[in-house]
Structure formats: structure tokens, C-alpha cells
Image 1 (tube, rainbow, N blue to C red):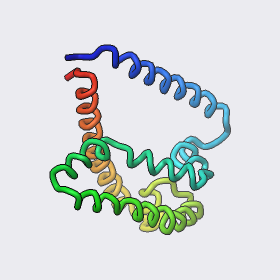
Image 2: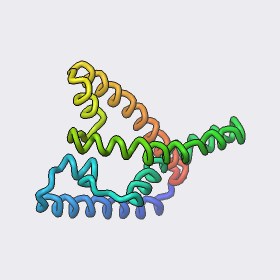
Image 3: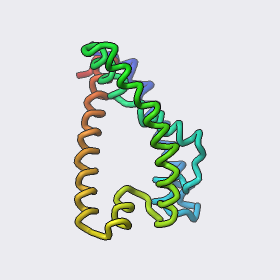
Image 4: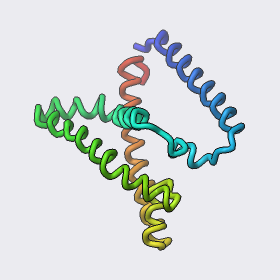
Length: 160
């Protein structure tokens, strides 16, 4: 059974997010900062706390709240221990590799992974192959997130 009373808060939330996006766009248009570096890298000025919260937001997905518990239910406690590996991996990625990547990225003015590959290999073929790989796997990940979000939406609201 559809629950229409749950749609109003969702619509209000989306309207507020849209309003914030419009406001932020107008503020950013007045600044003299490059869009790509500002959008992707936060002008290379994010502190550790903001970076940590970005990582938490990345892990907060449909796979964390729908897929993970489902697999843990089927597989058992071993899956939970396997999922706990994400904490030291995140620390290693940000603390050890992240600092080195940031130093090199500033030096070569890289913003994306393909910028790194372009600077390192100087080959359009490598960049094209890497870009296609990123597109294919990100589309697959996004489809999984949309499916998870749709299932949660259906469970909460009753709308198919």
C-alpha cells in the first residue's frame, strides 16, 4: 500500500537540496577559481576532517545498508570481519598513498586518475583505455546504487 505522507518530506528535501545547489552555483560563479579544480579537489585545501567525512559519505551507500547486511545474513560473521578491513585500507589509502599522490598531482597539475596516466605514459591509448574502464565500472556501480535506492524507496513508501 502506497504511503503518500512519506512523499512530502522527500519532495521538501529535494527542493532544499536544489535550492542549495542553485545558491552555491551563483556564489561559485562570482569567484575567480577554476571550476574543475574547485569541484573535484576543493581547491586542494580540504583538511583531514573534511577528507574523512568525504570518505564516510562514500561508504554510506546502498551496498552498505542493503547489500552488506544481506550478504552478512547469508554468509555469517566472516563477512563482517571482511568488511572491517575497509578501515585500515582507508587509512593506508589516505595516509600513505594519498599524501604521495597529492604531492605528485600538484607538481603535474593532475586532477583525475587519467591525468596521472597521461603525464606518466604520454600515450593517448593508455588514457582512452583507462577512461573506458572507469566509465564501464562506474556505470555498473551506479546501477547497483540506483537499484538499492529503488528497493529502499519501495520498502519505505510502498510505491513499486
